[in-house]
Length: 167
Image (cartoon, rainbow, N blue to C red; front, side, top):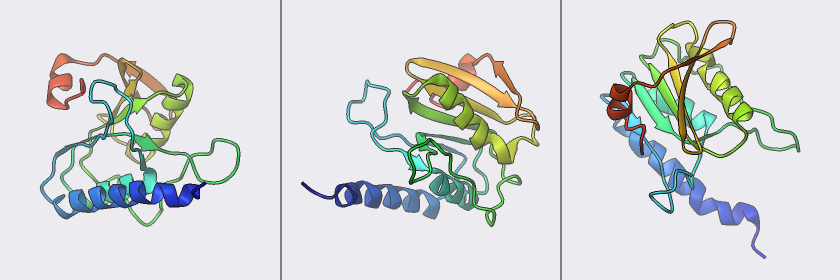
């Protein structure tokens, strides 16, 4: 039986290559939807990106306003679900990011909602920052205030079209 780390190596290389290519062209990038699926009409992503990759991506794209991608926030090691933390040396709050779409999630909604709260942390000082949550076949929008209290909002048809939220 192959070592699981060896089996994951091609996926890690592809993920790194994708992020590197996006970051190389990121100076003028405003909208990014990045999702890889085995079956296009199934909303579940077959590749998830970690928080460090997302943070580097946001840091290298100064004009980015929207990101839609599947994110895995689970820290490695241990049996319990612990979330990764943002690296302190990459400051994100000054970026123009207005919305983030956590795509293709199939875990309990409470965990997905807490992941959204965690992703929003550097951007909570702006009242216009919103998180879209793609959970099974439902799309929800939520914003968090400075204290981390959530507020569910209606998803507008214009947002669905603008951000390709229906993919």
